[in-house]
Length: 334
Ligand SMILES: Nc1nc2c(c(=O)[nH]1)N[C@H]1C(S)=C(S)[C@@H](COP(=O)(O)O)O[C@H]1N2
Ligand SMILES: [Mo]
Image 1 (cartoon, rainbow, N blue to C red):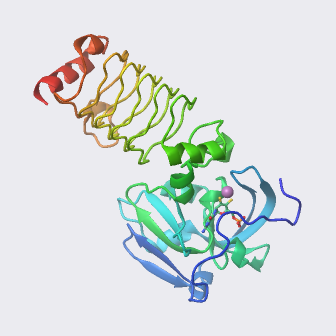
Image 2 (cartoon, helix red, strand yellow):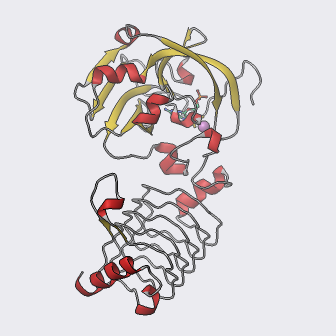
Image 3 (cartoon, rainbow, N blue to C red):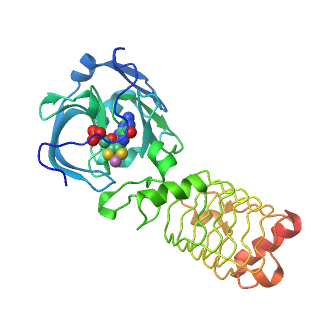
């Protein structure tokens, strides 16, 4: 908690090109690109609400009143396409600072394109003239000096998420601070910078959509970890505990799972060419989701397995019959 009246400046301290006029852009997966001057923005319906700010580094500031335009109201003009699933909020700053939200939760938690705080124009240091404000998320989902909102079909990790391992969902009620529960900021940054998870306890870590090629995770505790769509070429998971881990559509080419516990792990759609599973334990693991169980696309999601994948007979024998049959067929014909 911060003292009343105090509001720390966190992260970047100033925008780039403050003197150029501010035009907010909505682009990407929209039917109708828009660009709004501050005046035009002020002609949209104005909304105010009072929220508590929670920074991931554990300060909070209570009862802050922001005013501006709801993202929802801007989207009614921009008209997202069918493919629009994510909204990337991008700052006018030297590093093009950004963060991304899924569009639906961004709308339902009343994301605001804020121009005023406590009835006064936002100070530059706090993101003026325009910042996004996402109630019900850690404050790193609220971008200062908002320059544009780009709607995307696929997720694109933001600055803190990619560089420092901040959690991509950022829900303070679930304490989603960093990739894994119970780790601090220093460890989170170090894990990402060194790509070294080995011997760490990182149960339930969420690394989905990250680029972690050549990760070293030897003997790490990674039960229930999420590595969906993660780039993990050449990663070392030897001796790791990966029970019930999720590797859906991960790129695992040439990864090492020797002597790993991957019981109940999901490799559906993962690229497993060159992967070595010698000595690993595969009870209840899956490599294939049939079309009927995949309500999203209605397509089967099948791991890529071929003769370069090391999956010895005694290792695959505990698989459930349908999985076993799929794996055997791929090893022979893939
Ligand atoms: N452009 C930009 N926006 C940003 C950041 C940043 O570094 N650059 N940091 C985020 C973080 S981690 C926090 S806690 C808040 C801090 O906002 P404040 O400086 O107004 O307190 O801004 C968020 N938005
Ligand atoms: Mo933060």
